[in-house]
Image (cartoon, rainbow, N blue to C red; front, side, top):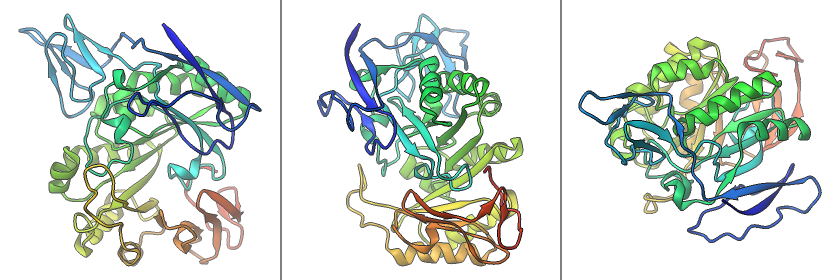
Length: 380
């Protein structure tokens, strides 16, 4: 049953439209009526059958979407909280039910080598298959879909909105897109048929087969590689490192554009040896031209007792990785820092100058440096 309608401004809407019953946010018009469109809210969850699970011999199902492999009995849900066993048929409850929608600069994801200066229709549902202690979107990622105010937004409406408003990219982001796999898959497939690109912003905790199928319809993936130590993943993320590394290798091998983000958390993953190991792994397995973004931590969720990352620590991470030969190393959450911009690794000149999410100058000529002609990796 539709409860109410929400109006979302098309472009230049600064804040994510994230509605949760915890906040009691009252619907309204964001940013003025011009270019706004209405989104329907609903309390009904979806009941589409999930694509990746198997029935167990003695009853129950096993989810094979992510490496967690939840075994779920009747009327129970997996770890993510958005997949439910109903008489041994596994269902996704969030197909077409986003709780967060916005038009973002692609630089916000961040994707710096993927159509700089464009915008992305960005969306998320409730739920996650991890529980990062620093999560900045924990109000939706750690909620069940009954705890968020969800919109009725099928893939056809997303693609249609992108076409009518000339938004060239759809981004699956904010929480963890893996847990709304079917919704993402169908939207990306339809989007590609209509000329709209799709990018996944993910922690990379997904099994090989579903990832392989999904990559056929994605144009770029940004992976949050949260650490290079398995202990960090176990203690801070409630996950494991090896499947993440395997997913990154799979994305690279598939030829889908890839960028990495590493959130530097004081005392937990910020040592020189970790930065050196990170650079060495990227250099050996992905290549020197893989963009790497170090991001500044701010106290959030379950890690409010730590300070923000010191700028000198971020600078150290940057310098170590550059010294190891990585060509595109960025620093995020440090407004106006020179490492927000892209430089030509051959002549050293500024190719794309950024200030936050804004592009101040772009000196690329197609995929090439306009000064020396060096080829710059990415999609432009």
